[in-house]
Length: 377
Image 1 (cartoon, one colour):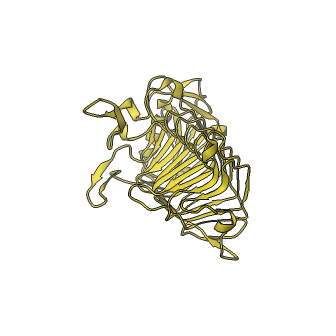
Image 2 (cartoon, one colour; image 1 turned 90 degrees about the horizontal axis):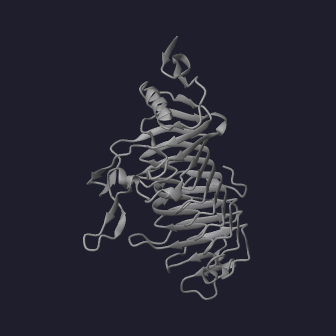
Image 3 (tube, one colour; image 1 turned 90 degrees about the vertical axis):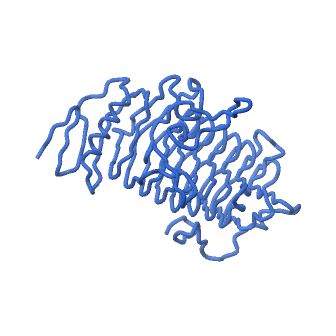
């Protein structure tokens, strides 16, 4: 049985949606949004696949995937999105773009959850040089007294930063084979209570802030990815980004840290390279409301060349507060970290030997499955 939809063919039995017209360059990103909207109307219990023809697309509005059970596949891993000049928008949002106050959680949350979504094969150019603000639509809060910027708003569109991909209030999400460059905020950001995310083969470079930022996200993994040359950290982790893993990830030449982390429990880096950080390779600290990260495990990794921009802060690992005690390394090489390999608040004799993992066979990481020295389960 076959039904025809404008610019798409839907084969009901295969739950497959594919645009048949050849892409013209550049097209409006609304073409992609229309395909997603038509697929979402099926309300299927099984994933509906949307295939987007390769080519160039100019985004004047973000692409929003706010329904479950969708696979958005870029043909030949070569769908190229560019944010139009002066639009101040995110490129792709997975999850609801809206938030509401939850008195029980004492926080803003999405009004519903989105699950089982896959995005594969997209390249984003955030065109940061021609954007004025990190908030969607540029609605930066202003101080009532002196009208100076105070940050993005708590709710509404402008609560979302102008990232390459934002995942919020979502679970069982896979993002693969994506390039997220030159955004006015971050490459990929997770927030608003996510779990069971798999991010693989991601490149995030030259972003205004971080390559990746994670908040309120658990039981997730980023693997086989490269976070480099970002103006902030390679990865910035805070507000309960807990029980998560980086596997085979390169954090290279980021202006601040390779990894900046606060307010989390359970983080594993396995077979990672942190190279050429402007300040520290890894920086762990208290937040205003949370203690220093705990259960941090650095396995089979390399940390080198820290302090490229600030030599006096160029430690391979810096544990910035007295309660930063539950961090250890195994089979990890340190070299050419300008201010030293390890720095611990309150300890003048900190060393790599002093933070070696003490368990002999396996290291239980991030509250999830145990992993051996090869990062396998």
